[in-house]
Image 1: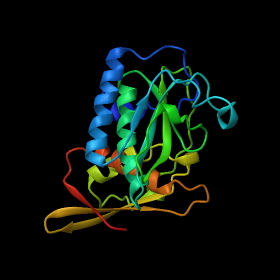
Image 2: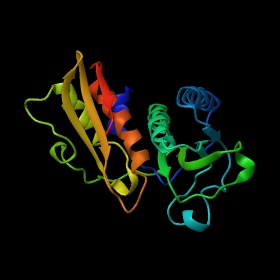
Image 3: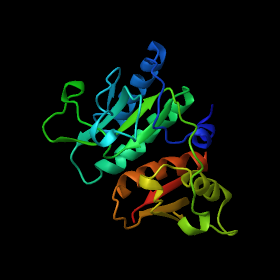
Image 4: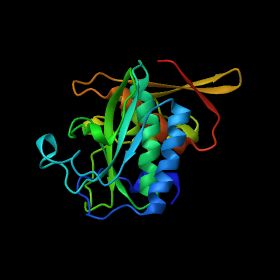
Length: 229
């Protein structure tokens, strides 16, 4: 399964089969966790065979069968949430390629302190449930490319493909509060701006990181530069 195929197949999974992750899958996930921590300056931790984090309390009636999850943590910083989104979605897509389901969780989990460790100055931004899915998912209403970008016939095709992939990105309560703008060429390099909109729900910085990753995957080999909002 390619990353584009994983984007197409992925949906949020809240119900999981009671089946331990295989050793090979754990090894693959851990290798990606290590890579994301190194490249993103994060402290993501893979937790397996721990059923308390998504049971009882807020999780009741929302998640079931979760015993594996990612603790998405890092040193407090203005850009932490965006990095969590960008690198966390890499883990989500890998999980999809490995035949697993996943779901971003901003609030519906419990912090089981014996399952992870935090250094001074670090915080948990969210968690990602993973496991063998028992959830067929549902069709989500998506915005159009015109609603989230300046896409037009005059803009490069790779930008349109990037926007289409971004529209399939998971965002908090499917809010899709982002806007992508093609700015033309500067110094021989295509310029693209990604902005987040206002949301009472929050999580727009994290959403933007996820959206940027999807856009990059959809844009393929196109050479462009992200510029500030």
